[in-house]
Length: 503
Image 1 (cartoon, rainbow, N blue to C red):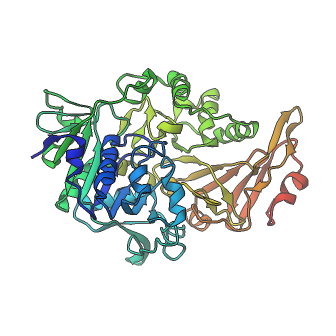
Image 2 (image 1 turned 90 degrees about the horizontal axis):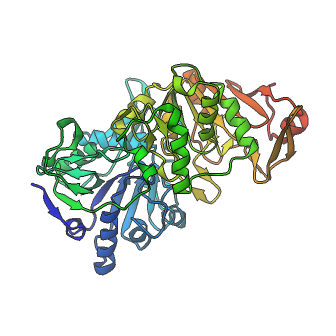
Image 3 (image 1 turned 30 degrees about the vertical axis):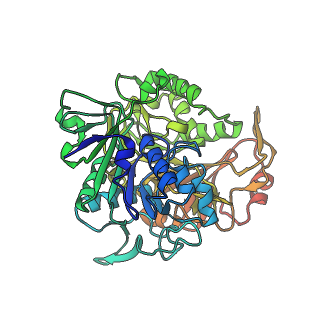
């Protein structure tokens, strides 16, 4: 039977050595008060310690002094298992200092492994990750030198087919943010941007005789409508009521509380960028890439658009009249609206539906998308892509591996090089005024996020769109597909590549 408690009382239920699963997504919908109560307890008692924390998509709030950053930094956590670390500003830095074990698994694979545990199974099989960095025959999921546990990902064969087997530690505590609890303890997510894997996480904890802690904005007298009660009260142990921080009106666009037509999507995006400092200056090169990429869209496409340069594609899709004829999706479970970006990435403006994250990755893993647009840090001669690990930096793979695994058309949007690149548009076409000092096309990628070998075997169409040319993947590697007007083939392309290409 659930009890209403203070955050400090609820956190007192957590024991040394517990495995906590957090339901959040990059920088949104984190149960901040629960994390900060855990930090207060750890500062006072040096407990709970030796914690393992699992999160499909990460659990930061873009502030290194809030949420979980403090207690992670001060040593309460022995292991982190996450799909993405982008919003965890101090955590992602100290991971590379070998302060604790940290493992990066594809977001959707963590989500499905949680769902498997909820159903009493030890783990989940997936084709996603084969021949990528997470494959134990390659690097494995450990991020730093002390992360050597080989139990999380195993290479297996079933009926003669190759899979990776993803297995998580047993979840004993959940920390979840919801909107409201009714008098029976049922938890609704009405004002939330997503529900993530909330139900599966609770079921997994209960299958392991663990505890479920939920932070809500309010208690309501009227029971929730049955379809709106994502978590039934019988699965809840502790409810913590924390009045939400006041937010700008622009954030209401992400709650689904009123209809937003597609004509208004970009208007609401601009309002959100203004209050989240999410607007980034986009270069001429970015606009050239996005405009060309948008031409790959077709009526009735189901689409995923990644962060960075791909975000501009939606603007050109509106210009060419395609935006109203495609269905956009986001990894957290939203479909049929317009994905928000920056600090509210994972939310959606005007979504038609928001369902469980594991269901979204069912769609992605099975090739249910028609096309996706992703960024890239590096591409090698074979067409392999590194999108998750830079020099001395680590954000994580997120949903990238799942999204690109079987989508029929994969479009990588990237500048030819970076750090100082200057291009302009003139009557004669694209003028490369100055090349960047950091190449993006390399002889060998630092780490493999996308396998060209897999893509060729799957029959996927793969494009690499830059500000000066477009490459296409062939069984032999990269082939030059288009050279933009104004670009000199030898000077601007061939002389800058560390390998030969077909053209």
